[in-house]
Length: 614
Image (cartoon, rainbow, N blue to C red; front, side, top):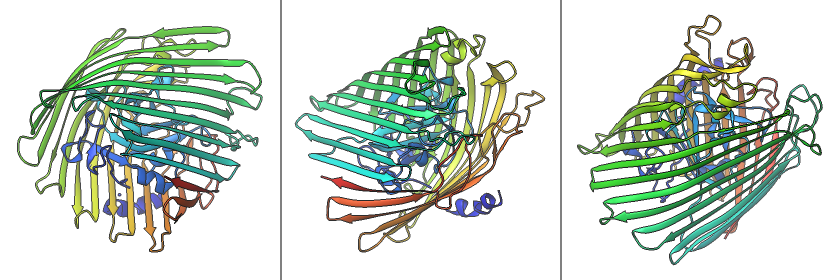
């Protein structure tokens, strides 16, 4: 803890802002805040962008390793890479993180709380990640209580291009990936694939056998621009995951196999010279997970989650200073379970309408406000509001931000109807989120500082009750804290970034055994620092340090998870115009730590590889 506190001054004076690169190659455009591309200085909410350059520089294989150095993010993983992994934003439950992949909501309707398991989501051909912190149910609907993680593959560039890479490392780990993309005539498209395998380590700290992991992911995109006003977007993503784990069976060798299918088909139509833009889309998600006591045995149990979704969004912009967004969504989640001699299933229907206005009443001031109403087939209607503002008195050098957001999450089908732990009397979760912040740039962008303070109150939060072995509602929780980030480029070859976040997330339900206790697996303090230097002869070197404070593994705060410090170093060297060799050492000082009680993590590991670009 002393290490974390002592680093606070560094983080507050200096946080890890990833470099910002937008889908249209502008460095100030984000799409997650309101579902449309807009300059970041029009957004009053806190957003961090992890761009393609950052992903390549960090050499990360796991998306969570990139998220871990983002302000306000905490994660827990049952074992090494590939194991069940949850991401919490600003102390919210992992089930309160909404996840998008190429525009498709991928939270699993058959998962606990519809939480997204980040374990199978590797970086592969992921080229951009936007993280929005704070409740935002007006734009994104159910589950956006803590915030939104928006993951995107690369949009095709002009002409044709191809990339490939391969690496090898500790525990017989192999990672391969490649993609091809281009534009010609009215068509633009791309296809990519990645493959990862490792012998791994034992998931549980009490065992010694190796639990291996294999992952294949493929993605495809096709865009057809029939005219300046009409275009069609088609996107698909597929993940196949095979992970050995240590679970309930007394025998070793349990295996979980997952197939995930993600699809998007959208038609875009601009009318009246672009004054009225329309988007209608159908999205599809299917996640099949089957667990085996032994690899060669019969299935033990399994889940299937499926969501079919229709979306319409219209954007009316009569003036440069005003936009009106209107939307309708229909969503049908379905859940199926089999195993232990039983089979169950359920579905629901959600219909939503929303309206959002973005106006610039005076130069430098952008104000956003909106409302959403959702009608749930089992819980009736619910209305959420949200508003934010961003004011810059000096052309973007200083940005003052403030936001208010309401969140809503209906109980997941698993929480309601699971044969063993479901509770049909659950109530929906509701939240209110506030934050205020400032972004300050110095020296024409040579230094950028961001500071944000926040608070979120959640009512009827859903929790697993260890006394009854069913899900129940906690009356109230509260999370508050602050985030600080700094990005420095004092000279062209040197970049420095750091981040600090303080999160105080506690049970405020009034229950004697839990009142005032910290919510499980949410460390109060976390600091990250990254430094990279490009040498004149082409060599690039860098290092990242992540320090996470103590937390508790359970709601009663009787099982402590000690804080930890991780350090990693990396280097890359181009050979000619198209080839690059690279390598890294993770957990440099072989720290022994846990993010979930009783589960192992990797010690020191080393990896090296090559990249080729055409």
